[in-house]
Length: 64
Image (cartoon, rainbow, N blue to C red):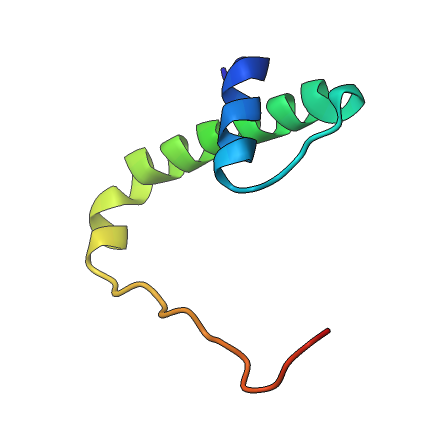
């Protein structure tokens, strides 16, 4: 499980500002997401490695 400090550090790297009152909730949700990703990797890792990832798609028009 991530700590509040780890979540805050990850957010800063991504350029996000998480309000103090939301930090516990974000930490819990991010930890759950990362745990789920580890479970999926453990179960389907070999299958996932056999598939090419989707390339990023960038819109041709500006969305303001």
